Length: 204
Image (cartoon, rainbow, N blue to C red; front, side, top):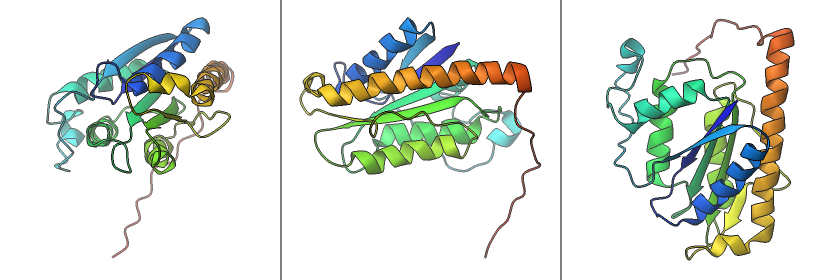
């Protein structure tokens, strides 16, 4: 079992990275393999809705997004950690997720998703909601914790002082581990839920 963790911070010693490290330690103690992908300092452009991925099976812009898609395909869970700069997940994270989810056409049903955000003070819950929407449109169960998944810190390392926030992420990782293991057992015993052909309804 494996979880792919996305670090959306561009900073080498980021508070977002500290949060991911808390989760990584729990996953590994639960026997779940982890891989961290740092995207915050990469040049990732947004989706242009060209539709080419429908034929090619991958994004027309052949960069870290396509590399991440293969890692995502093999993973049982996805964690996205993002800093909050101006009221939302940072622009690189949003461009990355839009292209990752739009251009990768493999079945994501029952892969477990979790997001968390880090801010000096405000904007966390709105940003947290943005991350969760990528999971819920893809048939991915969303792992939860004891509180909304956010940590607080401005200066480098400051999030370590947010005892409740770091505990929230540890609980999140334990709950996510339980979900991943439970889903694996359920798939073995019962299989995946029955699929219906998608019905598209457009309103003008």
